[in-house]
Length: 117
Image (cartoon, rainbow, N blue to C red; front, side, top):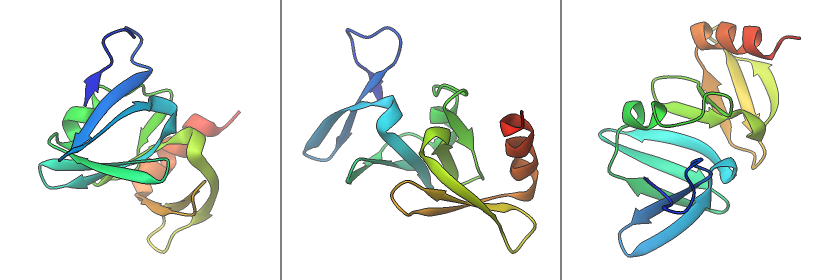
């Protein structure tokens, strides 16, 4: 994931997955999902598998927008439509596209603290 050259505020990123390339607005990324040493980035109706670990990407993402839900997922807070209790004491986030993402118990507590007025 490379930052678009003309945008020093990291509002857009260049994603390439094989022969497919996209310039994606950061707010349009709804979910980043670990796939070993790779990460699947979900945006719009597309997803791209990129050659970077989730840990590496987390350090490059705006923490005001993106939240580490678990070892395997980073979610865009602006894409969360609802939160329900999960079976393990954590939460389950329903994203705008209907995707459900489990948030660990520890991260659920952090999310509650962050979102409370």
